Image 1: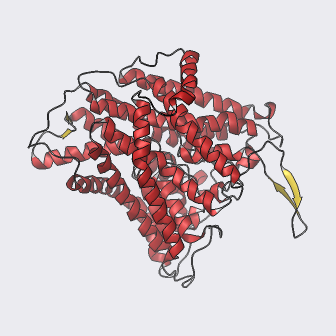
Image 2 (image 1 turned 135 degrees about the horizontal axis):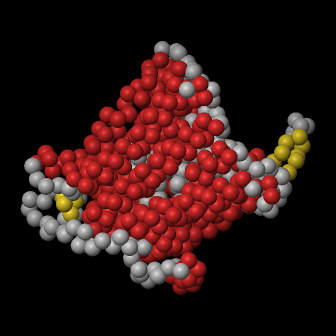
Image 3 (image 1 turned 30 degrees about the vertical axis):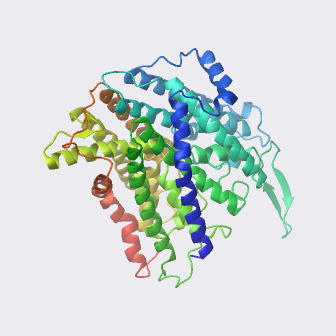
Length: 563
């Protein structure tokens, strides 16, 4: 790794840490109804939205009504995106005259984009029209990210409030997240991307003559606007099939830096907002520190694996599947960040990563993508692990578990376990099914443990609502479109519903005053315990599967065997 690449990584981390308090304070003001600098600019749009949907913004609900509103909104979004794809050929803004999408691909894509997953079994430039990309997918990029923020806001209110059943208003949280957080940032990044050469037009595809004298079709379209929100909202859906490796999506090293920066910007800020909303900034920094340690560990392991000598290729860098414009370090950094967050954008093909670097990506997703994670989703996923950690710590010292003054009892632990098991069930059961089915094996690009890793990665990405792929699996089949779509829905709502139930339960409880006997959750001991629980739970659940894939592949590769 060169000195310049190391400087880029340090600069990225420094900027993100420096902006975390700013982003957190801004979002704290937005979601607590205080004055902020965007209120005079976009306040009219918030008011208009409430009038249009006939909602009283200050009217709060219990967790059940909050959940019903969330599920209803997402169901309508699913149906809308599904119909757009099924009627694409008859809709405007289709200069390439693309046909209607098959039912199973439309199901998969609809499930993917309403859940902030953005798994793509299709090639964007040859499958979806500009109209579907803009009206369907880009809209979902905003509201699916806003849904994640809404859930963590409900969780924070459940933790910080006492003796009430009110955890907020879903429609208010959704509106404010979209208008004051996601929309302004997306506009700023989209303008910068256009200035750097990212495509943003409504032209038909261009046919040009190459230097070799052959004809090539160059795709066009409104890409910059979708790319901005796909990174800011940790969605990851590429306008083009090659995603952030495509020169029209990610043309320069600067846009590459900004896209990585955008993925972590809001998730990091949410940790600081969390601390302010629960009344202890130290609590927010505690969560931030645990996430940051896991992020650095994964990054260092991946960099070491990619720069280590490969017995099959000598000491040469592993450049297969990587863009020459970005090189190894920036490709590895992107792969770690995008799988830490539930983003799924890629600037290299993860199928070509070394087995250990590929395993880091898989583990990042298997842990629930709680290493900063998706917008909102990473933080409420971390709260699940915090509850489990507090419960285990309470058993160790023989005291009733407490977190921020709230007693953690059987119901909260049960819901936390359900949230954790829903994703692991989806990953392992459906991976096993695919490995035993001729339909699942038919799409493999490789045999042996690498082929297993391709299947395992696909279902892990779907259950973790990530959306990235190993790029070695043909997933555009009825089997994979349907099963991955089901896993995507389980991974999203199988976690959200128990988490909201936890929020509702905690909100009803009294807050126990802090005393000398209270187990502290804002020090290094708790950080260590939290990381230990995360790794042990992940290790015990997924180690057998990882052993059959990337671990055994790494051992065989060291003996000169490839797959």
